[in-house]
Length: 92
Image 1 (tube, one colour):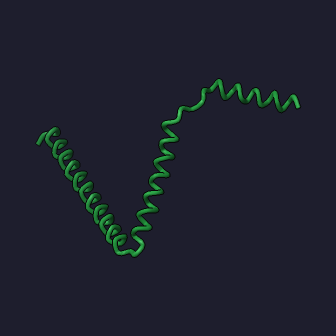
Image 2: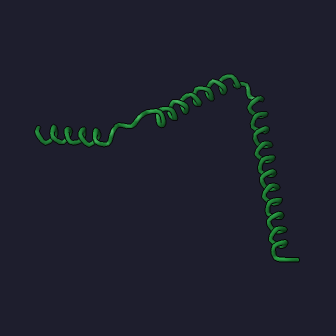
Image 3: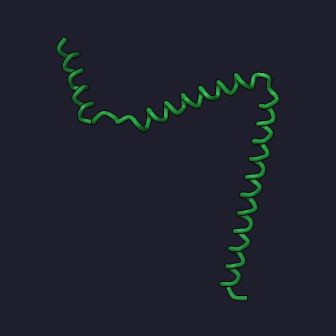
């Protein structure tokens, strides 16, 4: 057996172990999610919970849009405002 063949076997084994670990993680995550959904469906306040989740998602969406869609003010404009504020404060 050559070193190259040994390396290939090692890489194949690592790939199999990695895929198996990812599959196990996916299955456990899915199982946990299904359990959570079942628990939510058994609640009597499901409509209220859904409305609350909707409003929270809308608020999060608004925050994201405000964060990434708004153009920040120009750096020099900020410096000019600070200078004007200082002049107004020092002049009084």
